[in-house]
Length: 167
Image (cartoon, rainbow, N blue to C red; front, side):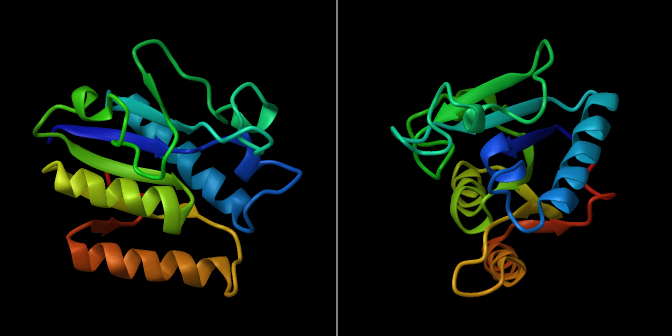
């Protein structure tokens, strides 16, 4: 299978102090394991990085904007300014038309959701890794928000996978 690991907004502002998501430690461990497995099996890796506006914790050039993981030679970084990683970027051109996209990252109800739906619209099979995405509490616990996103995406055709399954 022609797979690509797409790591969405795995940036310091959401996974490290001063304001990490509630599940930062667990989601970081899951993402780290996915990245290691992808690299060990020669699955291409694309990092998507959010470019926040002036004063945002992920404004370009700030510590929060930095990716958590080092980008190795041959891996790509796509900068975006909207929740959909395909909109206004070259992501569609980087993905082979028949690629199956494995997604992990931040935030479940924003960029992860939008990017998964856009990947489906571009004709890609999409797998979202349970425990590989997270968000903040916002009127309800973050875990409940992430679970609802998984239900919505599964209904839309996204495959849900346990961390040990996608590759």
